[in-house]
Amino acid sequence: MKNKGFTLLELLISIVILGIIIVILVGALRLGFRSVETGEQKIESLERMRVSFSIIDAQIQSQILLTYQKEEAEEETAEGYYFTGERDSLQLSTNYSIWGGQKGYVVVAYTVSSEGKGKTTLHASEHMVGVEETKETTLLDAFDDIYFEYFYKGPTDEVGNWVEQWTDTATIPEKIRIHLIKGGKDLALVIPVRVGRLMLQTPLGTEPDEEE
Image (cartoon, one colour):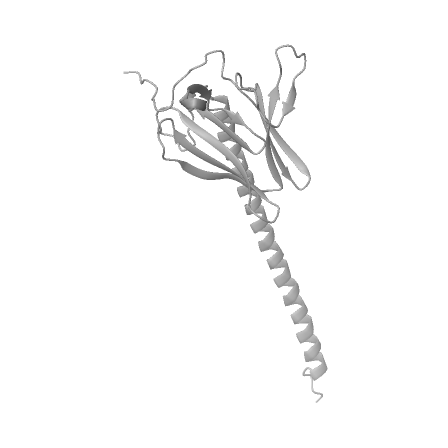
């Protein structure tokens, strides 16, 4: 009878083929896991961006013009608005708190900072009017650049323009635009300011009266 068993060469070829199949399967599984992980990270990033945009939009649109007593030369005092606008920072007073559940008005400050590797982050700090305790959080991160612009239109101007610094101490901008730069793409969000004609003036250290 002839020997019908496998030869050594056939066994080696079978092992090699099996090894190649295993390598392909492991690679496919790794690729699948990476795709799932990348997808989850992207979804988390988009959700965080959506929530952050919602917070910024709500705080700017619910802005209230509050004033505080600022010291001038020769120990004189004058009233100034909490609102300040720069390219890499924005401060305003509002009745919408990031943390919620707080009664009264809060002053929120958005600040852009560099976190290394050429990436920028948008931080938010908040405190109640007349209270020194401050809360901080990170709203957006891992962007190539983040900056603010302010729409200015003078009393005699027919067409307004966007500026990166707000220098008018008597008024506030009609619109505020925040730019998020990533991978050469500019995602810009334009937020209208809905303060209205009522100019509420509350000195620093006082609380708004609550309805009984």
